[in-house]
Structures are given as C-alpha cells and as structure tokens.
Image (tube, rainbow, N blue to C red; front, side, top):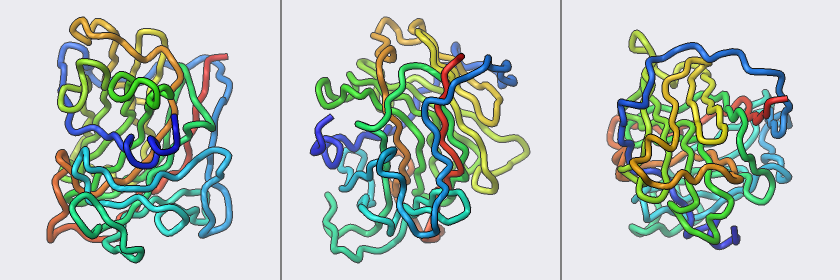
Length: 282
C-alpha cells in the first residue's frame, strides 16, 4: 500500500453490522489449540511516555470523511504512548492543539490509529489482542485487519476482518464482522457478543480473537466462541480472505454508527492495549 493511501484516503472503518443468524453460534468455549508458533507479538514494554516500536507499527494521520468521524489521528506520542507498565494507551481527547482541519472544519478531537502494513502481515492463524476498551456515547474502539493489497485493489475488494468493534452506546456488546465485495459497510457479515449480567467491557481487560483458516474464520471473546463464518455465508459473493492482511488498532470519535459524543461523554477516553499476538499452528 502506498503511504498516501494509508495516511488519508484509506481510513476505512465499518459503518454498521448485518447479523446473519444462521451462521452465528451459541457461545461455547474454544477447543484447545495445537502447539503454536508466535509470528508477531507486542507486549508494549518500554518507558512511560515512549512511542510504539516503529519496526512493528506505523502511525496514521488524518481525518475520516467516509464515516463522518470527528477525530484527527495524530503522529507522535500525544495520543499513542506506552504507560511504563506494559501497556499501550491510545487516547482520544477533546482538543485541537495543532489546529488540525477535518472534513467538517476545525477538528474537535484528536486520537490515534496504528497499523502494521509494510511491517507484518498474516495469512491465517490465531490473531488476538488483550485490551480494556473505553466507554461513552460516540466512542468507537476497534481491532481489525485489512488486505495488504488495498493500495492496488481498493476497499472492499481488499477484504476487512473486524476482530472487535464497540460503539459506546452498547457498553456490554462487541461486534465481529467481515467486509468484502458485495458485503461491505452496513451489509457486512457478522454477529455480536454480549457480556452476561450487565457487565461492561470498559470495566476490565478482555481478549478478543479470531481463528483464521482457509475458508473459515471463528471469533471469540475470552476464549468463548460466538460465531464462525465460511464462504457459504456470503450469498454467492467472493471470499477474499485467503491472502496477507495487516493489523490495525484505533480509537475513533463519532461517526455514522456510534453517533457523535454528547453531554454525557467525558474526555479523555483511553483504549488500553496489554498485548497483541499472532500465532500459527505448529
């Protein structure tokens, strides 16, 4: 992917989720995985206030008119930094110290978006992140993947695998979704997982994962499987998930799906990432 595409034109995030009940499964505990080889790992160890490892992550900049998000993604460590305790903190703030300009005028918020394009891609494997998500109306954290060929074929032809998305008006629920040609945006194929007993995802760390194999992707939260998707779920559209994908983490503010922040939304909000790991079966 070319850098211009990464920084501005390719800030693609999903708008909504279409639930296809026939392929969603009742939550079950994942079967033990065979011995695995780690192909990517970041535990975010480093001094408080330092940036992410540039050999693993690059930081995108810009706004996102496609989803009508309100934030400007910044470089540096103002909005993405290590906390010195083994975590990456992605922080959304209600501020605009750099006089950034967004699609709607002077930006109202700043945040950060990181990806591994040009540094790491995976084709199949167990992809997971342990993180504590933020809360509040208009807050939209995500851990997801895009096809490395997006710079050549565009979106949604590239394919998109959303491992976890949360919209702040659903504090107990996360979504896992596939997007591709003929099933993108609000037509994405996915399902939701809701914590029991009214628990909120913002109250603790949780592990969000996919197990990705040829012609099959399975989603889980804390080891509990809640859906599996195969080419049979796509209504005759093409399965575009048998090729290299790169990882993305971001914290958006506002947009078509979550709506904008309101008087109940406090800032700053933090997406705290403990670990990101990709393994393949040994």
